[in-house]
Length: 295
Image 1 (cartoon, one colour):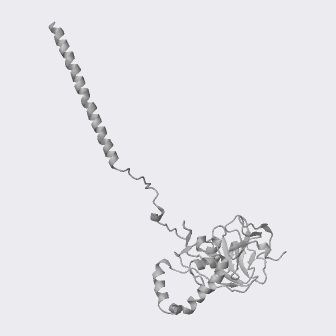
Image 2 (image 1 turned 90 degrees about the vertical axis):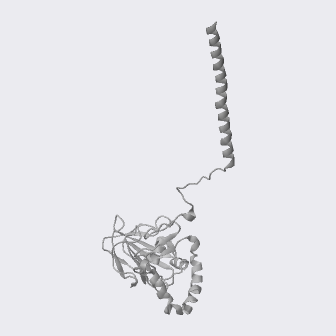
Image 3 (image 1 turned 120 degrees about the vertical axis):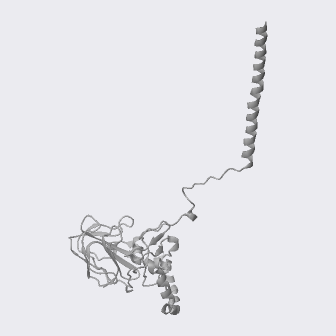
C-alpha cells in the first residue's frame, strides 16, 4: 500500500511539472513573436541597389588613347587630321569642324576630344549655309587673335598637345575632269554598305596617280584596313582616297596635280596587290565609276 501511495504521488508531481513546464516555453515563444512583429512593422524595408553598376551620371568616362569613346566622342591621336577622322566615321569634314568650332585650316591636337554624335553634327547643307556666317563674324572682329588670348590658350593646352596634327588648306576650284588613278582591272566594285570604293588589280610598285588637282590632307596608316593610305582634297565637296600602297610619295600638305604620281601600288593592309580607291562627296561615298571616264 505504501509503495502504491508513493507511486501515485510521483505520477501526480510529474504531470504537474509537465503542465507547468510546458506553459513557460509556449508563453516565451509568443512574447518573442510579438516583439519581432512589432520591430518589423516599425521600420521600412531597406532599399535594394546594385553596387556593381553605378548610375550613368556617376560613371566616369574612360579615355582611351587615340580612339572612339562610348558617348559619341573621339580622342585625337598623333597623326590624325580632321579629314581622316571625318573619313573614318563617314562624316563631312565641314560638319565635323563646325560641330567642334574648329576654324580653317582645321588644326587639331593629340588628346583633343571631338564630338561625333549625329545630333551635334549639322547636315552638310546646313554647314555650307552657316559656315560663312559663323566665320565671317569672328574673323573680322578677331583683333584678339593678334593680341593676348591665343597665346594664353596655347600654353594651357601644351601638355596635351606636344605637336599639332598636320592640316592643309586645299583649293576650292571645281573638278573639271577626273582621271583613273591606276591602270589595271577593276576586281571589286562599289557597294554603299559593304565596299565603299573600287579595287584595281596590278603589280607591286605600279604608279598610283592623283585623279584631279588637290592637296594631300592625310598620309599614313592610322585608318585600319587601308594600309598605307593617302587622302586628297580636291575642293570643298570632293575627297579621294588611295589605299594599300607599297610606298607613299607625297606628304601631308603637299599640292598635287591631276596625273601626278603620288604612291606605288602594293598590298599593305590586304592579302593581294591592288589599289583601293574611293571618292567621297560631302562625306558620303559615291561610286567612282560614275565619275571616272569610261575605258
